[in-house]
Image (cartoon, rainbow, N blue to C red; front, side, top):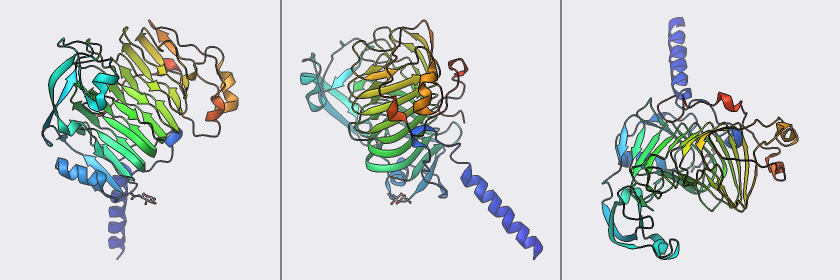
Length: 378
Ligand SMILES: *[C@@H]1O[C@H](CO)[C@@H](O)[C@H](O)[C@H]1NC(C)=O
């Protein structure tokens, strides 16, 4: 009898260790408290169809990726008219003429008669509420299709996954991660590479509380709008009631929108590393309704940290950070700059928006490292 009891409790201990270790750590900042699929037993999809089904059904799930899921050619190809706003050089992106973009937004750029692209990339996989999507070791890769969280879904964790190769040649070829009407989303240790449109886009409807940590936003691409191997469309944070904690991320080899912030969005950018942002472009673009607290970040080889003419508000700790204490309960930490342009604003008029919220901790900018960013590092 006694040995039986020991046996069952040992089994229970093993089971709880396994489920507790699937998602590593916990979100800090605005999405603190997100649980995703919680303690649901892990499932291991083996096909793209099974992955789509697990992500989209209405059961709380912990979904573990143990291999590459390649969606290219799973939905066929489409051909559309397009344009070449940046020329037809071999390094330039072309644009699919979506919603008359070629006529309206690019001032009638020269037309390209036909663009053939992979249909799977156009729209991301639907992710429903209460899901954890976690890569195992360095095996969790999704190619050719992104993830889409929309229409009121909440409580989702995406961790340790790479999302790559979404019609990278073509603007409007697809986004890696889309939020359009969400709350409580944590994106952690995710790598994005070779994407047609945005690496991460928080659309115009409210994205609610979002934490993005330790991600590798890699803008290196054979095709870009700047025709120089640097992707222009990286991070687009617009929205109507968005609170974004952006911490410990590595944003590099981009040429614009890294990030673009506007709408009604408060962004806490802390302890990130911006590296080698094209001198033709910029890192931050802050438009109307964008409110940015940037502290403890490192900028290296970022000629233009912020695009001129910002109409949003931002605070970058230009002198003593102690002014932050009454808003976030601690001093703000200085940013650090190496061979980079200015990023200086003492505007504290919006910092009261941060009061009473979950605020991520900050280390000195000198402690920022890229050693464990992206997938395959936790
Ligand atoms: C997610 O979990 C919450 C809390 O348990 C529940 O109220 C909600 O219905 C769940 N949503 C879905 C789509 O399962």
